[in-house]
Image (cartoon, rainbow, N blue to C red):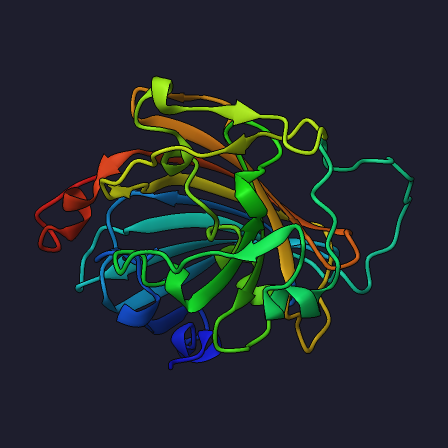
Length: 294
């Protein structure tokens, strides 16, 4: 199995141009989706594909505390970029300034976790190992998700998960962009027919226990825009487990927003991400590269 570190390795061509190779094992369908990056803004202009890619970096503002660079990704010797974005760089370990308590927390609170060891053994009373995603989402198959037992998600259009890498690797600072793109698809949590949806209060904690027929047709959710705000530096050696909550506020006319919140094992906020996504049939993704536009 190719590790995440190997699959995301880059080679410097010069001081501002880098080359990488998108691996099929870490892909979704036929698309691929410093010191510390503290903010990331990406716009996905064209569908990416398996194979080599070139990153070009342009300095926008080099500052004492933060620096901003523009990055663009091109494939197939194309003159037009497939992805463009801005990154703000800083040093999370040397930042200084006012810090104030906000008393923020997730609401509703996630289900309690007995221990990550219980997760690994699949014996936690509240969390169960999820079935691997379809072969269409190969990148997701490189992770292992643990979801609330009996479908007891905290709210409509919301999904909680504990996530780890399937090969036993560890999440590092550079993999947070990958983490905020790995979660149960909200659309696929909806029943096919509202009349097939039944709900009960279960143990009385207000969470719904559902037995529903899920949507079975494979969908593709291309990201139009992704923002990432990193709040905390992970240890240099990385972490094995992260908690993720994803929530949609509006799903309409084949377009949806997603808010993704990432916590560590001690429930400290690691990152917040916001996405704008389309909802398309998977066949749009599987068409030959260059013949289909998002």
